[in-house]
Image 1: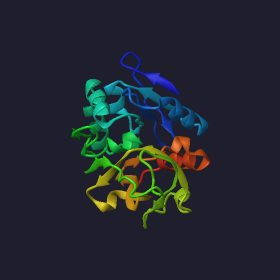
Image 2: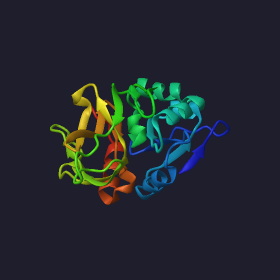
Image 3: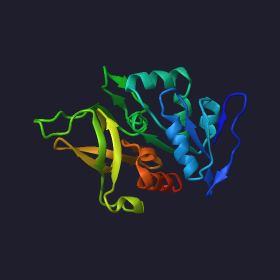
Amino acid sequence: MRRAGPQAPAARRWYRGAAMICVVDYGCGNLFSINRALDVLNIDHIVSDDPETVAKSGRILFPGVGTFGEAMALIRGRGLLDALQEVADKGGQIVGICLGAQLLMSRGFEYGEHDGLDLIPGEVHRLPEPAGPTGTRIPNIGWRKVDAKPGYGDLNVLRAAPYFYFVHSYGVRCTDPADVKGTINVNGAEVPAIIGKGNLWGFQFHPEKSGRVGLQLLDQTLNRRHKT
């Protein structure tokens, strides 16, 4: 891993036939865990908050921890909004993790209403509360089984309905059901855990904190281009 900024623009490098991955640092992401996971996978990458560097990247990893509105304010404040849109417009790959996945939506309703990146049509709402003492307490924290949708078996690691580690109080609601690639059950509701549209992907869980299966999913996702 190396850090790139305005004084040290990232060179175009290649890994397994694709552009080097840029981890976007917008001030709201758990960069340590992401960097460690990519290092374990021997995936060459940079970390940058420079809009020009981000815009020139062919593959973006977009982590996030915090609140929707705060994160969007930081993205705008650092001039990254247009850079991320440019990557998407060019057909580049963007992979959002946890809050990063939610920010791909059109808008979020966490402590008010906030515009999102609007890269995948949909909204972000609070998870349903449990009806009784045996339900899932919110925030939803822990290991949950993810059920992949039919037709989304091209990632081998998802075929056995594996468990991944979640920490969230809000979830996405995609406008197009076809954009939902995997779900979990939260208090009787089917909540998207994996979303995807073209080369835009979002994981509500933390693959970097989900052990071997999480690393496999991250590796398989970052090193192929999906057509959906």
